[in-house]
Amino acid sequence: MKLQCEVEVINRMLPTFGMRNRGRGSRAVLSVGKQEGKGSGQRGPIYLMICTIKDKAGSRYKLQENIENLFSKFINEGKATIRLREPAVDICLSKADICNLKSFISAVSLAHKGTDASPVPLSRLTPAKSSEIEKPRAKMIITCKKDYPLTKSFPYSLEHLQVSYCKLARVDMRMLCLKRLQKLDLSNNHIKKLPKTIGDLVCLQELTLHSNFLETFEVELCNSTLKNSLKSLDLSENKLKALPLQFCNLRELVSLKLDGNELITLPFAIGKLSKLRFLSATKNKLPYVPNSFKMLVLENLDLFGNPFTKPNPMVPDIRLKFPLTLLETASRATLGYRIPYGPQVIPKHLCQDLSVAKTCDCGRPCLSSFIQTIVGMNLHQVSQTVVLVDSMGGTEAPIICYFCSLTCYSLFLDKYLQSTRV
Image 1: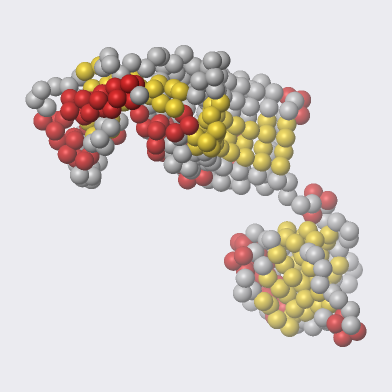
Image 2: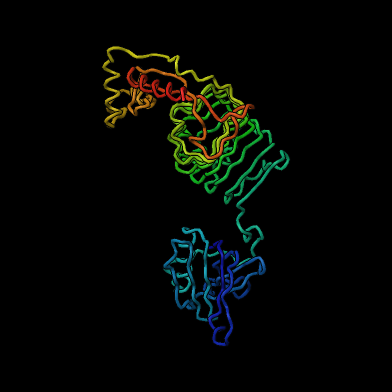
């Protein structure tokens, strides 16, 4: 039976002589087994061996009828203490895998009792290898194809993995088994499509994919566990033309980079990203920003290099229908009164229509009957810091606005005309 963890051996006699004992734990491999050699037999004593970097040969402690106490109150935190009678030491274990630690403590307890009814799972008491003792690797950076591991797997303990300039055509499925991964950087490769299983990386907080050949961002990723963990997403320098409607399910996003793509629109409901603080979408093909954009509260915004249209509120696109259809009336009522709905209540296509309903300046919803126009908005209304939109020093961008009725549009027009006169 073996266990990898951090160990600190505390001599209980040292305080008697006025000496301090407590120090720092060190990475170790613990084994429960019998002494090898001519004198060792089936009924020989069982030992606990501790191997560290400084002592690979290991120190051995007899277990049978030699344990004064086992402290396992914090075993669910990966901690336990074995108190021996001879020598008078406490063996403090920490940072252990919880399941392995429970099995190991059970084996130690059985070894102490020395009963034959429940055989103890024993290991060979041999010096540990350096790879067994070394601290688990948390970070790996690969920036050259010749350094890419082809014959061996990635360390399971990785929390930060960067694989750049390796000409990867797809995401290596071995990366998707790294359940502790928090940062994944696959920039400067040839990746065209993301696997849906990236959403299985439950701890992933930062995903960097700039300078690839991505054409789509999968809907499944927006509905995966990423919506609860992902805080930073870099999709710049790809070939994205649009992002899915479900993109704004990634509610934990703080930083979003979309520079150098072919986007003709930002996510329709981008205003729902309430935690977003840094947004960059330079050098795309944006004619305007969506209506929900004005709901954002940003610290830094950069929209330079987009072919924004010139705002012209006096030339609206009128799509009002008189009288309102039954579908329009029912849809407005459902959204206005926040009536719960779903595919089990109404057809799925109607659920999708309701999810992309427009919002009038008055706050009321509208579905397919509305007046649409382009208005100029100073970007300082949504961001503390704004990078100039154009080379002329402007910080204003066109935003699309919707009006549910002629009355709402008329009220807006009156305010607009008064502001231009001033």
